[in-house]
Length: 263
Image (cartoon, rainbow, N blue to C red):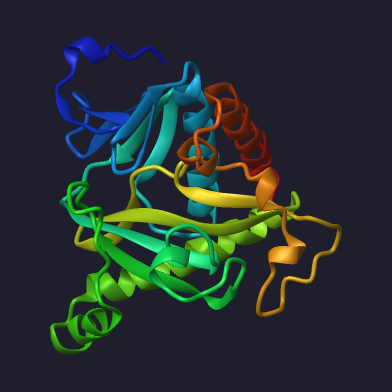
């Protein structure tokens, strides 16, 4: 399918995507992937040639799996390379919702949890999406209050969907000897319902390969069962890794998610 974006209205342009109005359907938009990669709330930025195509493939494979499993998402189809057709939002929820199975990353700095500690069930945290404020985390007790006293169904929905998606993707990556460590997702309201939106790509999660066959992942700390040094995720970029290495790791993720169609 050939799409001429020069004739389409740009609704929004983010760090890694451009959103175009669909002139043929007011209820959907085109989400075009860019070669850009960022970290540190957008402070660090580079361009990796070919990243848009890799991210598009990963996003396509993951959202098609989630749609098959009955998760409510904005994803409709991938009509052209580097482009997804998605449902238009009634409104966006300005939060990032993180789910964690294994302690890694920022949680090691703001809590006393040890790297590799296992959360069962996966933990869920809400972060207000604001780069200058460095995405501050919302208090869990306050979230509970909002659900209980203010009937804020969105928070309850996001918690539930985040864990549901985590378990689906954790199981899928496990088929290929990789542990889904954590991820961050975004949500919006479509037709009055809380819906998974945005993208799920190499920059959305941490992925650590298993360190051995048949690892014991049902213990309080699983760091000895995993291989953080073999990570496939954007931490390589955050840590100053070569852009070619980052590209190769993202391509490896795409080669795995391509097989999700058989799950």
